[in-house]
Length: 223
Image (cartoon, rainbow, N blue to C red; front, top):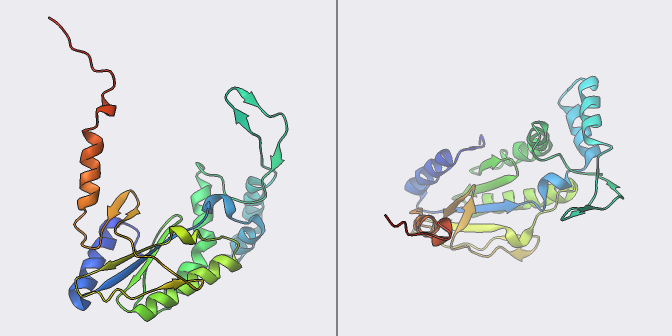
């Protein structure tokens, strides 16, 4: 299935599947410090597989390598520095592009699983299906890919939503451990709940907007 990137597309697809099959399970993956973990050597090897000209690959190599960091506390900066051996620079134009190229083979592999849907936005990846067997196959594939590509998953942050009133709440596992059901999962800034009514998100948004912290030290003007 072609990955759906926007939340509007994803929610629409959720509702189409629920209308047809009555239940749907969604797994949300969290890569541990994804942009900081990408190994430079593996990334450059993958760029070559795209038939990118060697000159361009050398440009990306120069862009990624010989970077260093130091620690600053308040106004004091440690004079020593250390080389950065992994990661794509966040805040750069090339950073997100390089990350997407790095995980492209994962997304292609997931599309080979029948009745499995994928949605990806940078390092936010979710897979969903009405068939538990297809979803578990996708979970296993993502887990194995993460290990072989040195991009570890934060297993404790993996989210699972059972959608639909007829959902049997099938138990899914990742690396032998059960994935705990979630009452709500934040996806690209939106809180999703099993009923897809967004009540928790609305309540939280209203609470934040009405918080007095938005108006510190109010003053009464006397005329």
